[in-house]
Image 1 (cartoon, chains in turn brown, blue):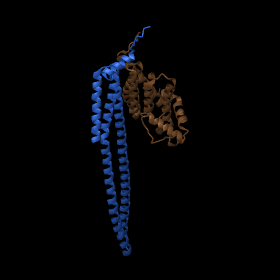
Image 2 (tube, each protein chain N blue to C red; image 1 turned 30 degrees about the horizontal axis):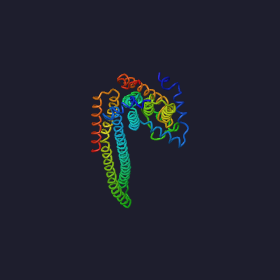
Image 3 (tube, helix red, strand yellow; image 1 turned 60 degrees about the vertical axis):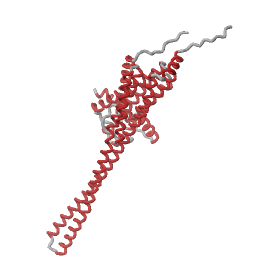
Image 4 (cartoon, rainbow over the protein chains, first blue to last red; image 1 turned 90 degrees about the horizontal axis):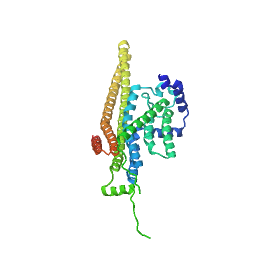
Amino acid sequence: MKEWIYDWGGANVAMFHALNANHAHWLDQVMLALTWAGDHNRFALYVSFIALVTWWRIARYPESPAGREWMLALATFAIAYVLDGFVVTGLKSYMDLPRPSLVFLQDSLVVVGPAEFHHSFPSGHASFAALFVASLWPCTRSLALRIALVVYVVAVCLSRPYLGFHFPADVLFGSLLSVLLVVGVRAALAMWRPPSRVRQVEI
Amino acid sequence: MSEQHMHVHGAHEHQVEHQAHHGPGLAQQVAIFTAILSTIGAVVAYLGAATQNEAMLFKNEAVLKKAEASDQWSFYQSKSTKGHLAELAARLTKDPAQNEFYKKEIARYDQEKKEIRLKAEELDRESHKVNDASEHALHPLHKLEQALTLIQIAIAMGSITALTRKRWLFMIALVAAAGGITLFGIALAT
């Protein structure tokens, strides 16, 4: 079972080596910055950003659908973050899959920073980045912004195997988990909230 | 031609007028509340990380001191072994000059052992002291973590308030926020 779901018939390890093999100093710095941006400790930063945009939207267009959409994104992100913390921590402890540093010999991989050995599945960074992007997705209408969000989450996901901390399967499942969580929380909140007070004014 | 003008209010203007009379809406209050709380949350998270780093540095220092003490105890052990060998040699030799030489050696080893022991014990004491400092530095961490959790709950409850327009949820958010800020204060005081 694990061979197909996690190992992908050897493709997981092969992809890890493909991503981890080639290093350059400048690329290491970029990947470290991406990992920093995907750290769940950045929650306060991201939630402040969403809260300020929400406030600005509501102040400018009170009770507008866009303002409500941002408020829904804020609520989704805040609630899903708390749930994601429990789910990711629980899965990490329950599965306790080894990290690349424990699977491979020291010479056969590059780890940028202090090596970690346990709780590889799922990736907390990938999960957090996907959580942020999935929460904001319905608020963004611009194609450029959506591309930027996808680039951000993919880049955070790539940074983890590149730096030697996760296998590709960890980041993939981490991201999917967050997307499912956001969809669930959003659906629950959408059911609960009352309809908008904005009426169509006919002249 | 009539010069009469008729102004028709749109939905947005109604809201602006409504706000002018009744102050900012609940959604706006919640957004500001969330922004302020998340800023406090960022400070709490930063202090939590700094506390952990400080404790880690103290712990590293304690391990280094312990390793130095261990080196000194090994040195002590080797001097002790050499002293015992000198004692054995002094007993076995028949030559008085050799016997005298080994006795001096035994005395030298005893003296060196005393100095090494003092040094090792001092390093052990320093290691314990720095280890205690590490434990002390970790004390506020639990409070900071609890404060951060309460702040996160407050943010979540606040945003649900704006969606559902149920003010009692905002009361829960305010209580959680107050709890979080109080715990933050306690963590800073300890």
